[in-house]
Length: 156
Image (cartoon, rainbow, N blue to C red; front, side, top):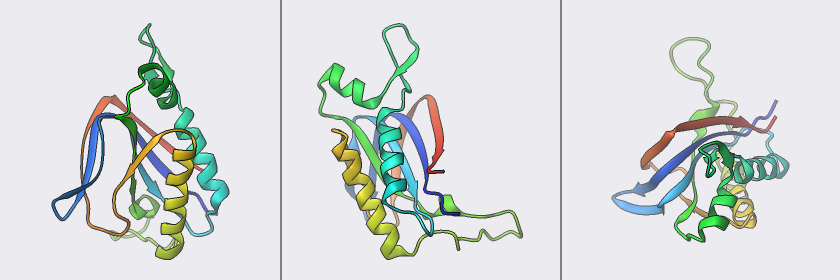
């Protein structure tokens, strides 16, 4: 069964670099690691993008996690708040047997890249700034987790 996976972290800042050059950066918002599985479709990406954009994990005036990243942007009118998406096929690892993880459930690179880019376009369609890493590159991700708040999501 195909399952697109995401690790969503509330961050105070986040950036990703490739070969010493920053490819994506947000001041605050959400850092999303995205893993695309064999058989995933645009429907999976649509569902995850909508879920992440509206996930109520930011504190309101009473200190309760009751606001989404979309609401934070609307309330603060701050263009530095957004979503940083990093492709991560290792989220599809199966390490139940042996010592070497099996990655056979990860989508083929061409399809995974297509859905990764589609996912980011869908996040932008939700009215959010969406920065990114470089697909299939060796990346260095730097961030400050806020809370910490980390949510695991999948499209099924």
